[in-house]
Image 1 (cartoon, helix red, strand yellow):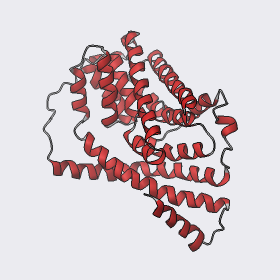
Image 2 (spheres, one colour; image 1 turned 90 degrees about the vertical axis):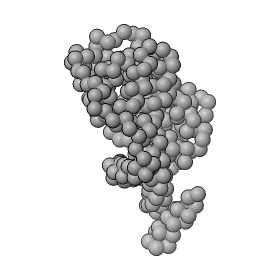
Image 3 (tube, rainbow, N blue to C red; image 1 turned 60 degrees about the vertical axis):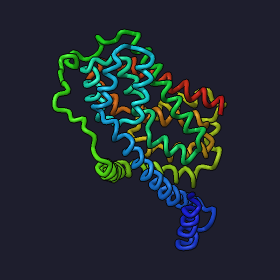
Image 4 (cartoon, one colour; image 1 turned 90 degrees about the horizontal axis):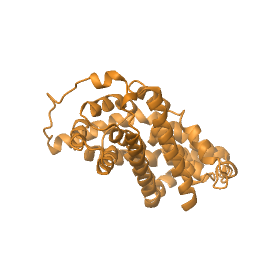
Length: 322
């Protein structure tokens, strides 16, 4: 599908700019042009399609669906994790969503299943992983993320940690009065999806470009398999290192994908690369700072610990099977 993109990049770099073949700068620039065009085309298609699909699942409707499953059951955790894939989420929405779920009477463990799945199993990342790495890696990503969300939510629910939620959360009464659940027309959904896609691309494009620039530098100056010694399957600490590096970063999944692509090219095991991406999207420092507004330090630490262990397990497990 993207053969024409590679030919365009080759023509611009080697014929128009006259940069020598196999030079470090030429390889890096070729990678940047090729990946920028390819990833933004994929983003445009994927974001628009996913936005249209999830227009049927606004946050208010998600809350209402989960509120009907107030029993802390296995099915409720599965439902919450699945809804986390298709509903809109960003770090800034974590606090109001958490408050809304608690106010609706949704069990704490089920709420966490949603809060873990929503950023970790990112629908844009899923589409990009499928486009760049194929169906197998995309399925591994979605299954592992959902399992982490479900198991972590069940564990957190069983621990009875409600007392470690900030008291003011239980005092808020949002209610459903005034919420309009009327369905927009097909034309309105299509137009709204297009406007959302344009706005989102504007917001995430700097992160994507930064990720591609870093990936281009790695492509030009870091030989293939150069990182295998430090982050390959044989290094028992590779996944720990990847997660530790991923947590402080502030980026979205679309911005991390180019790095994942280059990390694997440079010899990093796929499980390690996926663990890095999950740490960036599910345990980023900005999101933890926002969650601290509704979670007391002990519960926040438990949340980070359980989610982190799930990501580590995923990394090591898939390093073995891939």
